Image 1 (tube, rainbow, N blue to C red):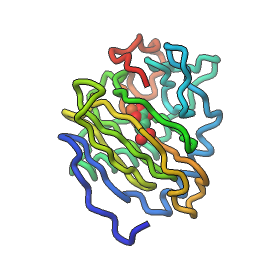
Image 2: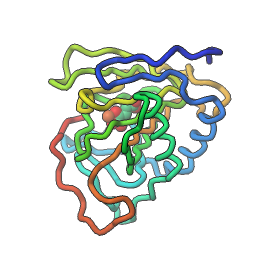
Image 3: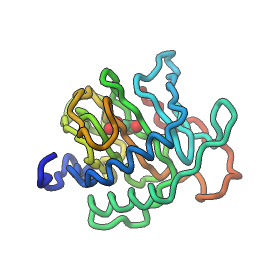
Image 4: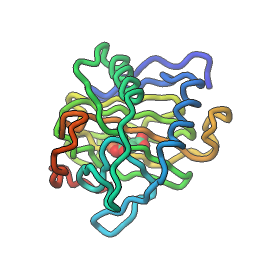
Length: 228
Ligand SMILES: O=C(O)CCC(=O)C(=O)O
Ligand SMILES: [Fe+2]
């Protein structure tokens, strides 16, 4: 971990990489929270029949390709979205844009990448809200490919997301295609309790329901239907 992190860098309009935003101490606390929250870590099945190599847990809403639900497919309610995680995400958006506006996140996807895991090019499109997405990295470095809104292909930029980095994408980049092409095993800090692999927290505002109001039906299939 360098003594001073590089400054924030704009990867595309509305897409900001904030290297080292989280101190080692905050990374360690968040990694411990991930281990508590991400039980069970589920394998996510794609409509194509494939299974994502990333294992996932959800807070606030369950995301499965390609919709949000209030209940798990196996029946139980989805664990609550922690207020502290919401405050952290608001802080990240403010760090990226100078203001968080009325950002009110209500869902977190907690992704665990074993060294061989990947995530194909996709867009986060099941949210009704145009609010930005906040992505937090812990553990091994990921090669994060940030593309464009037109399709999965070029142009893109490959960005190394190290432990403690935050990536925010909103505005004109909100529906940009992105993915993780590989994990660089053994690159994470030794002292934050992650061990081998990478945690990614993706925090979003669904716009699907007023927070705390559980009476709405599950969302229909989203407009996205983009494979991961
Ligand atoms: O792991 C990452 O950095 C990206 C995760 C992601 O794009 C997602 O969960 O939708
Ligand atoms: Fe995504």
